[in-house]
Amino acid sequence: AFECVVLITVILTIVNIVVDVDSEIGCEDDMLGCAPLWSTAMNYFLLGIYILDLLLHVFVQRWDLFRDRWNYLELTLVILGVAECVLTVTQTRLSEHIGIVRMLRLIRVVRIVRIFRPVPELHKLLAGFKSSVKTICWGLILLIALLVTWSLVTLELLKMRDVTDKLEDYCQEAFQSVFMTTMLLWQGLVAQD
Image (spheres, rainbow, N blue to C red):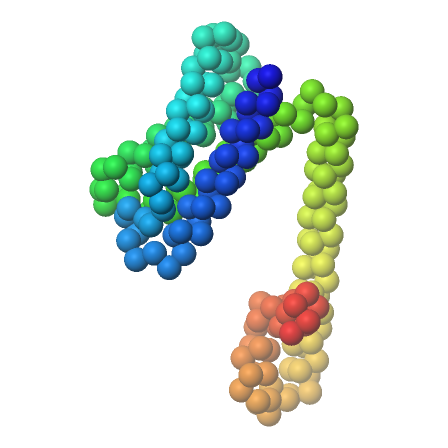
């Protein structure tokens, strides 16, 4: 039953974040935002649920609370939520950077992973996802290393042939450094541009 409440809370959080982000696009008022009143009320309600959940964990687990790293996530979520509310209500100079705090609300979605622990199939799916992300990251590092290598080769060949002065403006800009050449190759490889 508790997992169902957490799942519903996470789904409501996702819906609320989608509504907030959609309403913020093209909004002129950075301080207060343009989110509907019900969305703001829903954000406070969900924050209240997160605070209640944390307080129940503190009451039940006492000092054992700090042994589980998920509780650190819960504590961080509550602190960020309260900080967002305080910055929104007080409208201080720091409120200009509230967009960063609002982006950190996305961390609330991570709570759904907690539901995956008791269900073996979902836990295996999550472990497979974690493993594939690790493989993708190593593949990305290898791809970047290869692109940098070919950028070095390209720049050395252009320098040997002494054609860098005869290139058009776009090419002179694209081949002015290893970074720019790597970006050009990245665009050609990934974006097909």
